[in-house]
Image (cartoon, rainbow, N blue to C red; front, side, top):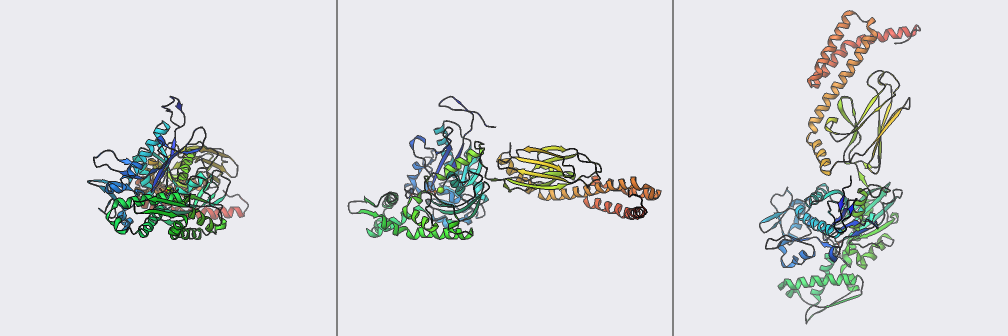
Length: 620
Ligand code: ADP
Ligand code: MG
């Protein structure tokens, strides 16, 4: 399955295709991969430009190719209308979703149709958030290709745990537009937990809190890890609270202390300068106690740790309130948590660390670089998907229903789509014909009612069923879907113990698009499918009836008159004639006719049998 690619620097053939992990952040984005030798996740630092790529896209006035990252960030104040930041906030959203936040952005968000998805206007061109996100992804991809000297076509991308389907789909589309096959969308807190090594041992059961304070957003997630599956027990947070608010608090503080209100109102440059100094001060105070800088000849700006803490305390308190709500929603108390993980650049602020640790009653874990941890976890997930970590579990659900074919070509679902894996399910079947000794088990995948519309995965015969009247054998069919996505189907006839099984890889060879297409098809055809299913059920009932009546006449002809036999044959023929009509009502009417005619015969034979049995003769 793996493609062979050539390492351009060494000329060596590389067996393993690299799948990168991407943290597509509101403020900053990163790409990481698993180093083939060390097997450690590493954030890619191309050409010493650092691992962090600011999530900013600038469209130069001369129409040149867009700039992404630090180069684009420089234009935020000088050319705001052509410089797009925080585009993640707009992904998968309509103008209505944005509400009054749309006006807060420095660029134009277009309200062309409030049901439709938002667009961003840069002069006379319109961009969707998907296109803009794809520019960031293209940049990350280019950096990865440049640093690793190999083509990169596949990725795992992270999203906040609260992202809805539309936002997740938009993220996927952005990846596709950047030339990346998105193998999986992973929740950011899940990726962070993976990076911390939680989830790498299928046996462990853990409950963790992931506290993620970034540039403009705050997320708290409570996750439970059980049998290799991460479950999001609760999420909370504030999509408009982050490190940028800390910067703003510092700017305001300086403006007041130095009475710069008028100067700032007159000079956007001064305001920008103050903002940059504020961020510098904030970062400096994460490791030092006193910051100082000369703004101009008249003003010497200072800030000490205590002052800073007082400025941001109300903001940090708000994050703690969210944590309290998240615990409440997860129906947990802090002492039930096995770990509290810190994610996001702003968790470097000592007051944040102290407040979080105090609230949860345990030292928060900040041992990994909080900027990189999500991307590192995404790389680990990518490595799992690449099949390089057979020892650990895939954290997943099955995207499509798995089932078997039953009478009339109908799909009988055994494991419904979106079931968490690993999982196991089964159902009991029986034979439809007397003396049937083989049973064909056909395994299908898909959402349609008719197996011919679904994808056939495998077929096998359960042989050696003891010959018995139809309906007596008990055949258990079990589907066991393991954590690697391998499906084992086993069929057992319970009386004889005869059994047979196959192993299948349902996802093999299916691209995301095909899975999506199959789901879409099932929606568009749902009505047709129900109608078709009803016809088939009618036909199956008719065939069963015909079989029973045939057998009855053969076995009990001696108790019926010539005329009764002829009538029965006629009605049976009439029923047979309706089978190809595709009209379920017609079929059922003919079934009823035949049934009405033959019921008294069956009762008569029953009476005869009972009399014979009472007089010591055997029942037929
Ligand atoms: P996002 O996930 O929203 O893209 P990040 O996790 O990259 O954001 O966090 C960016 C924020 O972290 C910015 O506000 C930045 O100023 C802040 N930050 C980065 N390093 C530090 C530091 N050493 N001390 C305090 N804040 C920091
Ligand atoms: Mg982040």
